[in-house]
Each structure stands twice: as C-alpha cells, then as structure tokens.
Image 1 (cartoon, one colour):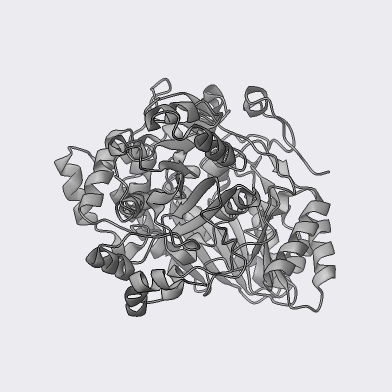
Image 2: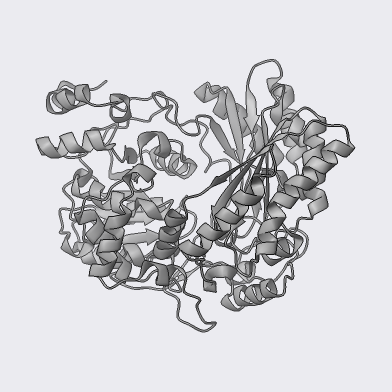
Length: 593
C-alpha cells in the first residue's frame, strides 16, 4: 500500500499527470521488500518510459535474482514522461523508486540498462532528478555507485564521464557480486578505492581505473530464470510471459552485434523450457508467452518444445509468440504450432535482396528458400507477410537494392503459378549501423544523402508492386546511433551539452531536435557525419578495444575481407569456425541435443 507520507509529498502531482499508474508501483508480482531490513540495496534504472522498461527481459532477470537473496533488495525506476518530470522540477522533488518510494540517492548502487544509444541523455536527466551529480568525478561518499550494463557498453567511451563502473557481458552473477563486495567495503575505505576494488571483479570496467576487461559468461540454468515478474498496470510493449530459449547465435551475420557479443551459443534443455513456460504463465496469468532468442527456430528441439506446450495449453486460449523465422529453418509445423488457430502475420528476415548481398553479410539464405517459405505460409492461410531488410550495407550496389522489389515480384510470380492470392507484404527497412565487435566495425556508414537516394530509388520501384508497403527507419536516427556507438571519450562532452540543453527521451522521434545536435557538434568541433561514415584501417586503435568479448580481432578482420569477396562462413552450430570465443574464454557452446 502507498503510505500517507508519500501521498502528501507527491499526491498532487500524480493527480495532474497522464497515466499516474506508471509511477505508483504495487504491481501484482512485485517483491516490495523492506528497504530498512536489506544489507544491500540495488536500484534498477531503465532510461525509457515505464511501458518500455517493464517489458525488458534483462531487467526481469536481475530484479528476480537480487530479490531472491534474503539480505539484498532490488527496486525499480523508469524514465518519467515529460509531464511528470516537469512537475517534479517545479516542486523541486526527487525521482523515487517504485516499490520502496525511496530516493535513488539512498541506494547503494543504481544500475542503468543501456539498451540503445539514444537513451544517453535520459540517463543524465534521471541522475539530475535524483540529486546525484551527473559527472562521476563530482560524486562524494554520500552518493551511490552508478553502474551500467547492456549492449551499448560494448563501447563504454561515450558514457565514461558519467558511469562509475560498467558490467561487460552477462549480468546474472556479476551484479550480485558487485553489490555484495560493495556492502562489505562501504565505510571501510573511500568511494574511489571501493571502485578500484570493484574493477577487480571479472566483467567490471571502471573508467577511473581504465582496466582491460573481459566479458562475463553465465550459463542458462533454471535458477537464473524468473518465473514471475511485476505485471504492469496497463498494457506494455511486450505484455507476455517470456522464456529464454538460447543465448548467442552461431549464424554470425556480419552486421549483427548481438550475435557476436553473446557467444558462445547456450541452449536450454527442452524440459527446462517447458517447465519455465508453465510456471511463468501460471504465476502471472498471462494469456501469451514468448520463446525468446536471437534465432528461436534454430533451437535444436524447437518442434518438440512447441508441440508439448501446445498440447498442454490446447483449448485454454493461451498462445505462443516467436520472433522472426529464418527461411532456411522455416518449418510449416513450427509456423502452425506458433500460430495456433490465429493466422496473423508471419515475419521472415531476408535482410538483403540479392544472393551476392546475403553472402556479403553471411546470411546463408537463398532466394529459393525465402520464396518457398513464403509460399508455404500463403498456402496454409497466412495472408500477411512481414520482411526485414537492411540498406546501406558495405559493398552494396543499386543492383542489390533492386533485388528487394525483385524478391517481392518473385513471391508474386510463385503465387500466380500456384493459383494463390497475393499476400499483403510489409517490408521493414532499416539503415545499416556499423557496430563495435563485429566484422563490419571497420566499415563506413552511408551518408544521409546516400541513404535518401537509396530510399527514393526503392520507393520508385515499389510503386509498380501493389501488394507491398515499405516502412523505412529514420536515416538521421541511424546516423546518430553510429556516431554514438563508434565514438571515443569526446562524445561524452557532446552528450553532456545535449543534456544541459534539455535533451530527454530522444529515442522517441518527437523529442529529437536535429538542429540542436548540429549546433552542439559545431560548438565542440565534432563532425557527426565524419565519425559515422569513417572507414577504419585494419590496425587502427579502436575506441572500444579496452573491452574483450572473446572474439579474435584477426578473425573479425578476416570475416570483413571475406565479405568483400562475398564468401559466406559456415554457422558454428554446423562446424567450429575458430572465432576464438571458446578457447579465449575457456568455455564451450551448449547445444540441447
């Protein structure tokens, strides 16, 4: 229950804002542990709106694991929308944790999830609204340790002036180790010395120490997977139970950061997945559960898993959700098991329109496989197909772009030959962003002008095809992502200036002020386009090399050279391709056969 002291302080504001349910806590499934009885207090901070953050699976894992420890507690905080944060500023009130209603400054550690680059200024604003100095060098003994994890910490440099320690790799074990070590040292040595001690933990990087760091790897056990989580007060982005099938992806598409930084592949056993799904649905009451993975239908037992769960839930109205299907592993049985009785949309990710381009990015897909998978869906009642494509990839030509509408025409031709009605096709087209720790980390990004010309070219070709719709990602947003992801510590000054000019929640298009970006870049003598579109040399010192994800740099470079010649690499599920992860990190892949 919300106490009267909190309502006296914040009640008037909650009555004035849109969706006060974002800020009251007390959700079904929350732990709500006693703040005063805990030896260690961790505040999980998600720098985006409540409905985005509460859906994040990493947040559910850390929240559950810490709260299972009797002497520890984990609370949550999400970025307030602008109406709430403006009223807090006006009343000079701090942000607060959802369950305990305590101020962030009262916690031992505040841990931010950096899921995407456009959240950086939101982190700074949340620190300010918590009365915690934004710059790490200005924090004193009374301030909590500010921690960050997630995919963006693969390059810690841009946020190095604001974060005390970064968690590199899997967070299941290391976050608890950090919290327990901190409480053992608190009061016994200065804050700066504690940070040095924390940096000795495997998987922890501290900008003040500049220690080389190797990522942490966690095994996918029953114990480190939640079977309950807070149920949001209103519909969230992914409002369903989640079971993680596997981590890592052996396909190693050359543009994909997630596949490279999450190696090796680790699969859960069928029995564990079925058990977790049943418990999660029972505990939460959800009528949908998702089988989560970078490539779910690559799991070696996916048909058996879906078959057993579908049998268990038959007639209950409980459905399963799968991410996009790979055409070369497409199975009509999987599609039918996933769809149940509803034939909504099937999602397939060709990524590129021509075979040459798919070989360049190491997609290991043929035109025939893509068309056959689509026709199988149409024959069996799916009339809506969604494709994912990426444009602006290294070594791309206009002939490769032309391959995208030609692929759609190939699908339509196959439909005519089989006497089928054309499906409604939606193509979601993103712009390539060169990411650290991938074979394409050396590659340049297309300029805005180049991308806009390619978009116009595709729109003109698309007009001849009546059953397709193209949705393009904002090319300027993609350029800013590249600018952040491959920048050095100078980007910290840029982020700080943006924050001081009230940039906030920039991952939402309506909050993105491109003119402000341009003004600040000129002021700091930074060229956004030059940094985004720079092509690095082989032996150039890259800003993110202080972080080691286990993949050999020479292997990544050789993959880049193979891309130039459109030579594909065999997936590591089929044969070890000697990327270095298993030998360097003394680990191995786990396939649930």
